[in-house]
Image 1 (cartoon, protein in one colour):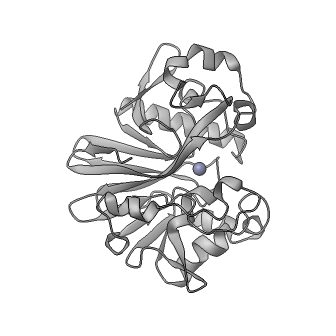
Image 2: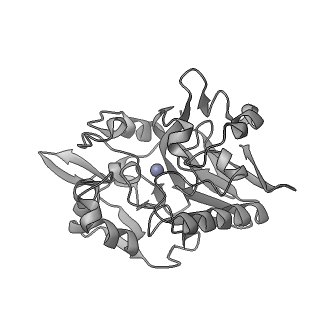
Length: 290
Ligand SMILES: [Zn+2]
């Protein structure tokens, strides 16, 4: 369940909330072409594509970064007991996520920072938990960090209607009201190892997160990509990408940056190990799981 990687002296561990069949390809990708699956069967089957159901397999997990000084959570999954009637995969969950976090050696009070790449339903859920009928911060000593543009977007009408309805109210507003938030604009940073990069497109204030330790680089890609096939087809947006051209530009930035710097890419939704390397090929880019 827990896989750990190292970026220099810093460990990065995946803690999974759920992993299973998600969208059918032509639902997730408006530009879907089945020839891509045929060309990359070894990469996709069986871990990332369920042939019997004809659906991609998607993981929803957090990454725990442990530096010498800090314990940092990147993205916080869908959370328990959240009311998401339009989204069955996230509706009224009761997963042992906190027990899994404990198995990975992390108690909630030990988390120093929670970084959210963006404020969609599957990235902020464990920001809060239900306590005596109220939503309270799950991580009482953490500073929650995300982009100001995301906050501005979801505190408005977009946070009350549509696919992300209610998420701001139960999973973001309580941590703001608790005085536990810090907003980043453009290139924000945490200490000397962690940096935010604006990568808009999937959402208006989406950020990638970079981890630098000595010469080693980790890149947390958030929802810049949902499936490995997008490494070979960076022009493919998901149906949830709000701004098609900016989403493509952010994806190309990530792939260029990851390949040139030989970064380990920590994805938000790839199944298998969820982490890998991007290498440049004559035709574009290739993905290799670590
Ligand atoms: Zn997502």
